[in-house]
Amino acid sequence: MNDTSNRFRNFAAHLLEHEGALVDSIEPEGLEAMLPDNLQREWRAPEFLRLGFAAELPADAERASLESDWLERFSQLLGLRGQRLRFAVNAELPPLGNIERTVEHNVTLQNAVYRIAQTEAVWTRYLLFIFRYTAISDEKRDGIVRFGFNLANASACDPFVDHLLAATLGPEMSEAAVKPATSQLPADWTADRMKRAVARALPHHARGHLGPFVQGMQRRLDRDLARVHEYYSGLREEAFKKLKKGKGDSAREKLRIEAAEREYQAKVADLKQKYDLRVKVELVQTLELLCPVQRVTLVIKRRKGERKLAMDWNPIARQLDPLPCEWSFVSAGSRVVCDDQLHLVSPEGHAPCPQCGKEYCRVCSPRRCPKCGREEVGGEKN
Image (tube, rainbow, N blue to C red; front, side, top):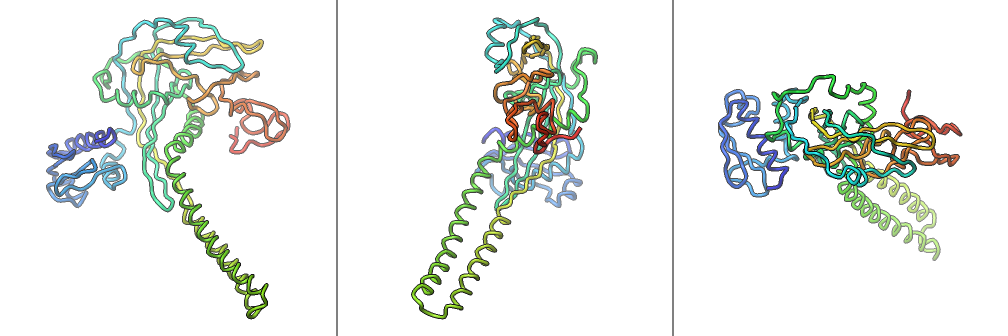
């Protein structure tokens, strides 16, 4: 049984027990439950229910997977409960050994330098999001997207988001743990800032999950387009040969060619509609983690300007947060520091304008190029 199936089975067992069902594990990798009257009515299910979560099912068991309707049933049963949770982390903060080496391995600035100003033990807030996506084309694909941010510095915790989520089920997490004072925590982001960050990060993560699915869909589309093209090219070729040799009714052959052209275009349009990709995403859960961290304050210098940046070492992942990208809100890649406000952005967020070739910061100028005024595709409105 893989980790996803195991987590789904544990979740199903906990939820059924919470609703009053008597639950027991059965082999191979399944659950047997005696449902209370309310669940029998709501699900129109018998009193005794068997579910299987792996490739091999127990006898008389229904398959429960992320692609089955059981995920939807459990979601309806939960309602709004558990959509927003807050945990405090009980974790010891070991002293950082060689701070300079730790920072050096995690900080890459293409056009700026930095120095370490100080280190201190503080608290921070990680906001983690779990989205469910459904992609429908000629086939259907469901899945889960997980990502989050450190609210102190906008760093994306992509490399260790699964560690943070897994730890919420461990003994170091507790909703009843002593929490730090509000003054010790980073402030809430504004609604606009949070919306902008999620709107930037979510498509990036969804595309990463859907990459193999889209590639398979494209191969099938290319195959079907090639078959249609070959068939109608053959019809046109045959009609042209008859015209060239003067055989048959020339007017009739011309009509056949025109009809083949129309039918070919109609078939191509049908295939494009068949393989049209529609993706729906919905928020499943938001987790806020209050976590002690070792904070390393960097002073970043670019030409005559400088700014301070907090970089947090996380005790659960035992690593430093990635450098933030204040444009894409994802973790991958190096960073460029802009000249005006010293924003940290990925190279794509400081790329040349396609029209005039001027490099500019997409955080400073999200809507258009400051030199030629070319509007940014998908740019934000102030």
